[in-house]
Every structure is written in C-alpha cells, then in structure tokens.
Image (cartoon, rainbow, N blue to C red; front, side, top):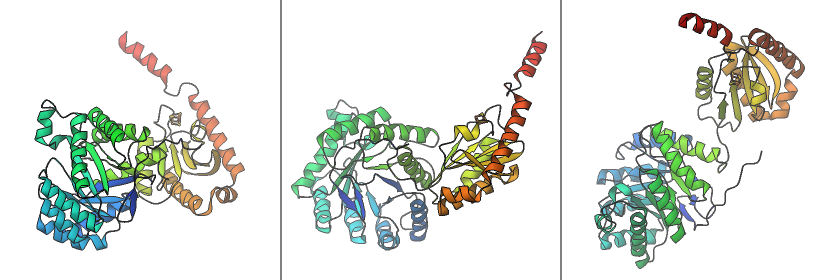
Length: 407
Ligand code: SF4
C-alpha cells in the first residue's frame, strides 16, 4: 500500500550545518543533550547515541563560558549539526557562534533588550548562522502576558514570535525558524495554526515539558501529529523526561509511521495477544525489539501469538513469526518459509531479516522449502484448532466454575 501523502504548507528553506529545514526538505528530528556541555566527551557520547537513534539536529545548552568552550571542541567532532540553546545572556550567543555552532535558539521571553537581540542577529547574519525563535508558553514576555489578560494565549505566543522577527528584519536577518511551544496540547496546536497563517518561515514543532513516558509520549504525539497531518511543521522535537535517545527514537518513529520519512530501522508489529496465544507475545516482542535495536534494517517484522490467525493477519509484513505447538512458523509476505523450535524464534527472525535485507524477498523464498513449511504450519494450525476450537479462552470450563462458585 502506498503511504498517504499530506500536503505540506510551503515554507522557506534554511540550512542548519548541512541539514536543510523547510522548503519541502524531509521533516527532521531534533533532540537535546542533557549532559553539561563543558563535559566534552560525555556530550559527544550522547550526541553519537542520538544520531544512531535517528536524530538529525542536536541542541546543547550554552549557559556559561565553559559550555561555549566545550562547544568549540564538540562541533568539529559531532556527526550532526549543533544548535546552541541560549537563555538570558545574549553574550553566550556570541560566544557560541565563535565556537562554530551551526544554529542558535533564542527565547524571546528571556532576552528582551532590542539592542541585545539585534547584536546577536547581526553577528548571525554575517556568519550565515540560522536562529530559532523559541517562544515558550511558560516563559512568555511578561508584557505580552499582561496584554493578553494575564494568560498565555495562542495570540500572545504568535505576537512574541512576530516581534522578534521584526527586530531581526531591522538588521536584515532572515535565516529564521520558529517554535511556539506549550505543555498544553490544544494551546500549542492553536498557536502553531495561527503562526503558520502569518509566516512562511520554517516551523519547529513540539510540546514542551511533555513529561515522562508513556503520558509524555502520548501528549507530544497528540500535538505534533495533529499539526503534521495539517501540513504544519518542518522539524520536530519530543521533549520527554527520559533519556534523550528515547526522544530521537520517538520522533523518528512518528515520521515513519505517518509516511513522512523513509523507514530506517525495523518496524516491529505484534498482535496484542489473546486467549489463542501460544507464547508470551509481550516477552517475545520485547526480546525481538531488543535484538533489532537501532540496526538499520528497514523492514516490517511481525510477531504473532498463534499460527491460526497470525500469518494471515500480518500478511502485509515483510517477515513474521507465529507460534504454534511449541514451534515458530516463519512467514515471508504471508507465505510460510520455515519452522524453528519455539526457543529459537527471535534468533531466526533476526537471521531471516538480515538475509532479506541483504538479498531480497525473492532470494529468501528461493532458499525456503515453502511446501514443507506450509505443510507443517497447516498441521500445527489444525492441531490447535482441534485442541481449542472456538473456545480459545476455555470459556465453557470457566462458566462451569463461575456457576459452581456462585451457587
Ligand atoms: S494472532 Fe493469534 S494470538 Fe495474536 S491476537 Fe490474533 S488470534 Fe490472538
């Protein structure tokens, strides 16, 4: 099935390091390191882990001179572009540019003096370094907060961004992207909608302070996915209270799930399990996920609890395995290809995935004894149907027990 296409709102393009943002470029994934930026080795280690998990652009705080000095050493060794996060001290923005960063993030609520904003923008203009105007609902300019009745509103957030753009325009600087994040999902969604009506600068989309997973993941996905499906957003960040690698993975997975980025890693699908399950599906799926990790095998792989329905329900998957009668039945594009002992299901799945990735589906079918595998699967399927029939959950037995206890 072809991935549905969403119409993206046209935006201008900027380039962060070598990564284009906006103007029809692939939507990128961002994250932020949580190490002290002065800790060069620790920060680089985290950046490499983030890049391996699908992060395209990474932000590091530049809150003190030691951080700027750290950036000077981090930038040349980083595999992905570095954006310096600046709050309060505009001089840190100047120091970060001197260190060679590929982008800046300024919070207009925290750096408010026009001469400071313009000094940073002039320097960025001369060095051709893009700046994100990062409006945050939690740190809105107090004057705007008062103007909008002591509340954070979408209008106030948009006005904050537009004011900053006006300062930038005064010094002829337009390498801009913008975010208007809030932790309240309907508020941020509305702010981005309004912003996208009045500007064509690329937008960085996120729900700020979304919190720990799973609630944080749900909140961030609700906000980001809603906007992406409306064509709004050129780069995204999950702000989770978790290892930032989880943020990068989530961002990447969301874009792949929406068909907005090419699949890079395994897309593991699994049945939710039911009374027919012949294995602990949760455990096998988790072990399979761990075994594939961040390996670059762009296939859809299925783990199904029973051979009765599994291969049919997952026939769209490139490869899958279903349990039956203490055996694992491997299938490729819905056709049975091999039978392995239940204890070797995960290993077999990984081995076949590697083979298909390297040699293709036809070669996998050619090496399989499809007839034998289908015969074995049919045998196990009918054995299971005979054993369980329609009563997969042993309901008859349970009803007798329920009646006995309640009589
Ligand atoms: S594949 Fe089998 S075990 Fe999994 S949900 Fe479907 S019927 Fe139940």
